Image (cartoon, rainbow, N blue to C red; front, side, top):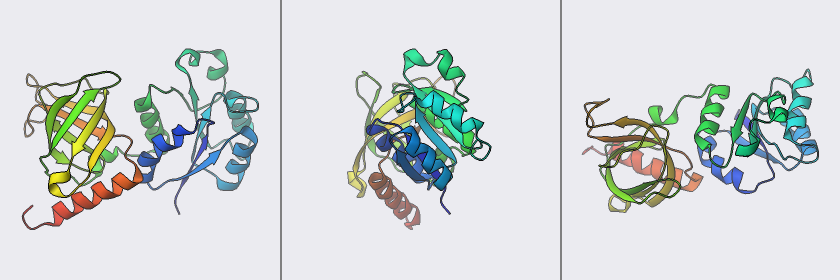
Length: 240
């Protein structure tokens, strides 16, 4: 039976941002627009994790987290309280009882890392089958970097290795435009996290050229399916 995650957040775009990642892990996402609906869904659906906005009506996400953690039957639910950067250190957040506090919209890496930790999930980029595809791409550091050109050394539904001259530190967030049209795939634009770096003065993995190992963060379910089909077809081809 698929596990469930509760999204108790008024903002409409949050569900779209996390759907690709948790879809890969085969979670079902359920939505609540206020604290009373969220409470009812936790009782009925028993989610393994809940994302809760600090501004969840009517009383705030911090009050909701305290209420859940004080309930004998529901307190096992893992809670991530989502706040604005200026609010993260406030007393109301620290005393909420949440299992993690994450600032958005900036800190998506921490959000995914906290989710994996609380759910005991492996890094999907390490386990997904990789096809040794060499295709062109463009990449830039978010939020306002200039686009650079590179190529892939391998591609999977969880990540890729980017061969390029311009390198960024671990945990940097990049926009990557991946051109798979030459091998029958899509043109993908995706946000990625730098998971590791092969620097010319320190080759962490000598079998790879200089570049970066990237984790793909926000593939849509449609693009995920297309990429999975392409990787599977390549790996099953006799020439591969």
